Length: 177
Image (cartoon, rainbow, N blue to C red; front, side, top):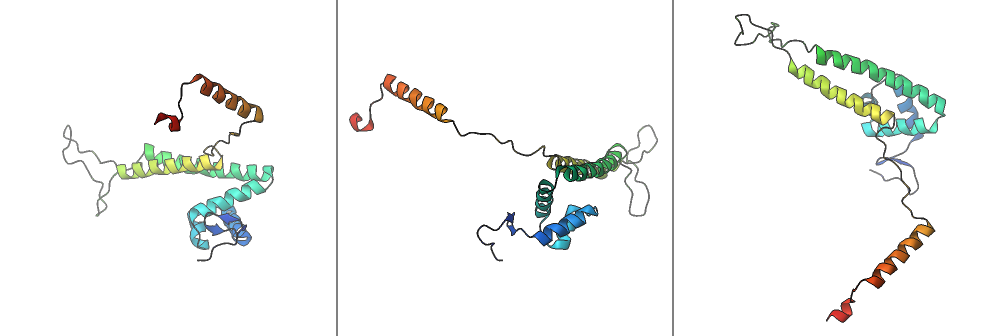
């Protein structure tokens, strides 16, 4: 594995490649899932995400907003499908194709067993959809804060420390022995 030259843009641990970004955007535009793009191009899925986000930041706002809206609509569709499974999970089916019934019938009538595995997987999918939506819309981006003090704040802090030092009865380490 070769390391990129100093100053070369990097996506994750991989050197940034314009051709790879163009292929990623082309496949993404054709609605290929991120995992599919990653496997086709032989890169990691998080690198695909970084290529997409880098491209969205580089293009003009109207185009990025249009793509973001398209992606949000696709996520809406996936979310509706996942919710339909959560609400109507279906029934467990035996190997022979028979609907599984509960072993101890209540009130004399056996009831079909719901497939909770499908419901749990749909809930996991909903969590992933919400994570993707948060990344897409920048909801999980860290907040930037200016923590560098101004000169006036720094001088005020130094003055406060000097006053505290004058008031305290601190003896230097050399004088303690």
